[in-house]
Image (cartoon, rainbow over all chains, first blue to last red; front, side, top):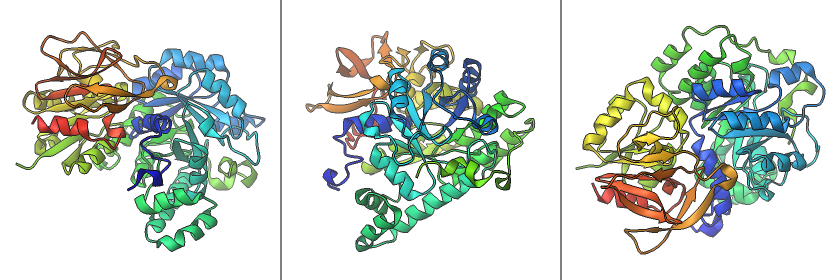
Length: 303
Length: 187
């Protein structure tokens, strides 16, 4: 294929290649939410491939209410000083000044995240302005392609953060996979209409129609609480998992973290999944979706 | 003989290596347990996080199995895979496989903000190679029989010893298959 037809994977685009390159290195791994250096150490020792530094884990943000913002730079710094694996941090949707601060802190990946309170109702960050790569949430194909067009180097399906309930993560991953599969069955003359329907850039729609996948890695987040949850989303097509409240809201974070790492690697080997699911203390209690009012659902933030 | 190359698939960029091998028309297998090594005549240790890989290698006998395998068959290590091939690592959390006598320094070039691509000189090809370095390690204290196969800024970034090769950059992230092809041609 002519490289000029694929701007998002163009081998001459060094900057994008280096950003997506780090996302590629995180595949097959578990990225864990941590709120202090001790938790970061537990996550790294358990085999996490990266940590997400944030002040409060999503289930506490949900409980506390108020405005959730970028974390204290000193807290992020302490975590950076403690672990050798990549460190990610979250900024609010559209809050490019928070992202500039996080980049200046030399964090390895920025998550423009619906878990924090959005700063801009209309616009996400123009991520191509940054040298540090971005990950963004998506609930469907159109949303994923809009974020990639803005420069995201990784997509994670949103799920419902802090719920301990896998149903939304499954819904979003299935939606994304089904829509991508459908595109591969269509004729070229149908793709402009698909771009209109999804509100997605035409060239990215063409990329998905040809390759059956996104031009950047596709991970899963929001509601993963057990090794089985991690294996489920991996089998549904997630190339790696983000685990938030599921680990440090459980009764045995270290053991659960190790189990989730192993389940993420051996996601299609039931014998290993059985072994790592044994002997764990109770997981986080979790919320049924009917207990979360529509206006409190985090996945609806961003567009 | 039909060549089947194993790609260690515990964590990291393993699928990208499968894609590179497919471009060369070479068959591959993902390796997550020791029995899967049996069909293979060579092994790639991909990039990823070396702390994660070191831990998962210890779990199901793979660490020992790969050491045995490497006595007979060629191994290629990339970035974290290079770290795993070293005899010594500047981080006590890593238990390397010690397949080649050198010391690996993790994250030598700094954090992701300092990741980069650069044209490097290969000693087996006249054309330069556009190499992505992602939070790359450094290769130090090379034993006498190790050959430097590529350098950047006067530092070795790709080395070979017998049929084993290791590099701190990522050939699997490019469409340029010369590195994989060079290794396979040594079999």
